[in-house]
Length: 118
Image 1 (cartoon, rainbow, N blue to C red):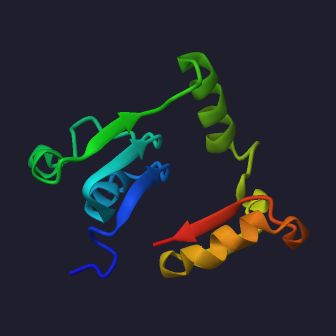
Image 2 (image 1 turned 60 degrees about the vertical axis):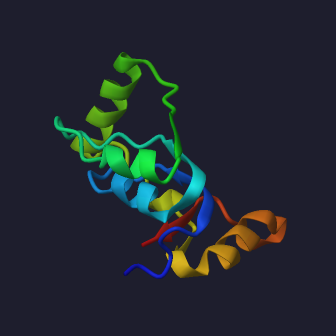
Image 3 (image 1 turned 90 degrees about the horizontal axis):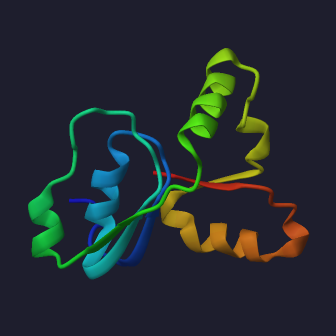
């Protein structure tokens, strides 16, 4: 069993991976909120709807770009014209989330983008 499962009041998923939404549901506590922002690209749903009901989860989707903007950015990633990896200034394992958020709050840390890695 995942030691972090059922622990968080709010889980914000932006991983853009097929397993991201399922992981977010697993991490949320009973009565918690899950915000799905990542686009996985899979055609079939990968969520267990019963988990939403049984855990009394509130699930909210968020997406702020137009379809044309999304296609343009994806093409930039696909051709290598845009490499986002230099933007990630800090990486922490998921278990060190408190340290990651402290880095974000510390204006002197030089943090540009902090990545939590499961």
